[in-house]
Length: 521
Image 1 (cartoon, rainbow, N blue to C red):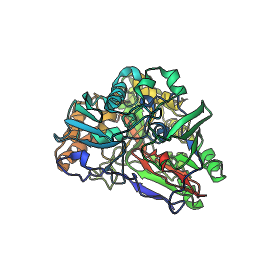
Image 2: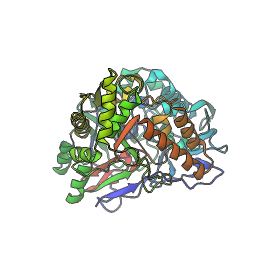
Image 3: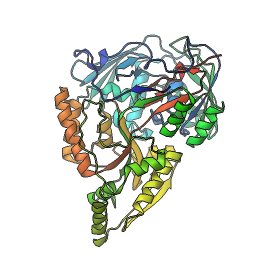
C-alpha cells in the first residue's frame, strides 16, 4: 500500500534559542516504507529510472528535486542535511546549522574527519568554495537565488563556517536542503574544468562514478570512504532516464528496473492496485505554467488574466492524469497553518473571451508558445492548454518541446513566452520568495510588484506564525490579481519500487536517497 509521507507547510517546532539548528539529529529522513521487510541486506545491484538526463555532473548545475535527477546528486555528493516527515532538519555530513539572531547569521558545523572519495578532506573551506560557486552567475546554477541570500561566508576552522545573510532568513536550512547547496564536491576536481570533472567527479557521497554514457546509462559503485557505514547497502547502481510514464511503469512492473522516480498520479494509482511499494510527498503549491511578464504578450496583465480565466483545470487533470491528479484551488493545502480558502483563480470563459477581444482590438492579439519538458505528462499538459485555448478567438498557442536541462536554463536566459514549472514546498519560505520576488534570480515569470515583494519579505522575517499568516494572505491575494502563473495541479514527487526493494526514503522536494535502498535476496 502507498505510504504518503506528509511534508506540508507546517511550522517546525524547535528550540527558540537555536531556531533551525535545534531541529535535527541523526537518522533517516522518513520512516521505512512498505516493500522488503526486516533489516536491510547488504550487497546487490540497483537499477533506478529517472525522469530526466543530466548534461553535467557539476553539483552546482544539478537541480535538487525529484524531476531534476536529485538522486544522482545525492549518490555522488551525499547530503549536508535532510528533513523528515514534519519538515524538521536532520543532520548528515553537517553536525549542526544554528542561528541565535533570528536568521541573520548561521554557523555550520561539519562532522570531523569527512573525506572525499579520493581521500582528500571535506572541510569548511570546501563548503565555502562550493557555496560561492552556486552564487556565481558564471556557474549557471538553478539555485543561485538560494545562494544569493548569503551576503558572505567565513571559514572559522576546518569544521566551522559562518554565513552572514543579506536579510534575516530564519528558515534558511530549508534552502540548503532543497538546493545544490546541499552537495559539496572537491574544489581541486572542480578547478580542473567541466570535461575533466564529468569524467571523474569527486564527492563524498555513498557512490562514485564508474562510467557514464550520455543519453544512455550511468554506472556507479559503492564508495568505501563513505562516512555513514554500513550504508550504502547496494554495491552498484545504474541510472537510466525514462521520459515516458508508461515506459517507466511497465519497465518496473516487468522487472527491468528496481526503482522508478515518479511524478505521475496515474502510475501511483497503478502501483497501489498492483501492490507495489511507493511513496509520495504531499506538499503545498504545485505545478504551474509561468507567463513571462518581461515581454509580450504577458507584459500586459490582461493577457495573463485571460489565460487564467480560460483554463478548465478539471479538464486538464482528466487529459494529463486520467483524473487522478489534484487540481490546485488554493496556494496552501488544507493541512497548512497558512491555508486560506481564497481561490487562486476562477474559471470564467466569458471574461476570458472579453479580455482576448479587448487586446485584439488594441492590435495585441494573444499569441505565445509554451516551452515544456519532453516527459509525457508535461507534453500532454501543454497540449491540453493549447487545445483549450484553441476554442477561444484572438488567441494562438504553440507547444515547444525542449530538454529538461534547457528548461532549467530558462531561469537565467528568460527566453520563453510561457513554460511549465513548479513551486511546491513544505514551509513557504524560501520557495515562494525565490519563485515570485522581484529580486529573485529564480523568478521565472519576472513579476515585480511592491506589495507582493513586501508580503514575501514579511513572510520570510515574521517573528510569529500570526505575522506570517497575514503576510501570506497578501501573497495569495496579489498572485490572484497579477496572475503571473497558473497553478494547475499539486506536485506528487515520489518513487515506485519492486516488491523486493526496501528503503524508499525521500527528503526536500522528492529527492531520493540511494544510500537507503536495499534489495531482499
